Length: 196
Image (cartoon, rainbow, N blue to C red; front, side, top):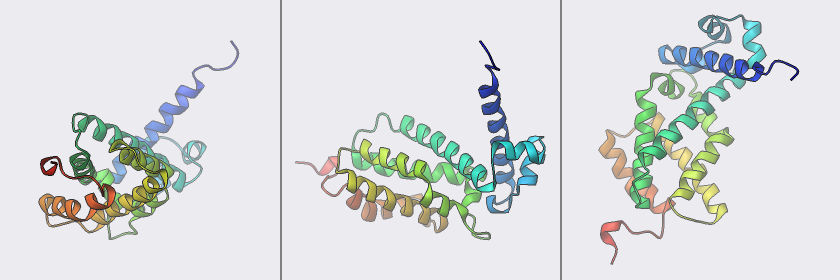
């Protein structure tokens, strides 16, 4: 066998180490204010090494957000595994996602309003976030692919809005989601306790 068969694994570990260091910095200061030189220093590598794994700050930010989006999606779907009612699944999924992002200083920093809230832009442009949101909507029940795509885009915008402009508390947000989001995402579904 020719070549270094561990090279790919070492690259993955190095990239994760850099992303972990970036996450620690994002927990201490707003993501938009964290520079590549700070990330390299926190990861214990040179800027040249950092740029070997991430060609620029946008690439690093994208990799970090995608890694965290996959992690949050896994946690959410595991938590919701026993929730079968689509309306309750939608509500609980959204509230859980809001709670987890807000409780993580590293993720909450993406929606800080003293710097440009880069999390909103990232959420809007990310194919990964779009695909994960579509997968969540599909898990609520089959639907037309065009509707799923539009509803996913809208749901991402609703979530972004709530990160930037939260409700008074979780009960207030739950009420807003029940009144304004559930009827749009699940228009023909009655709550389980209202079915004939």
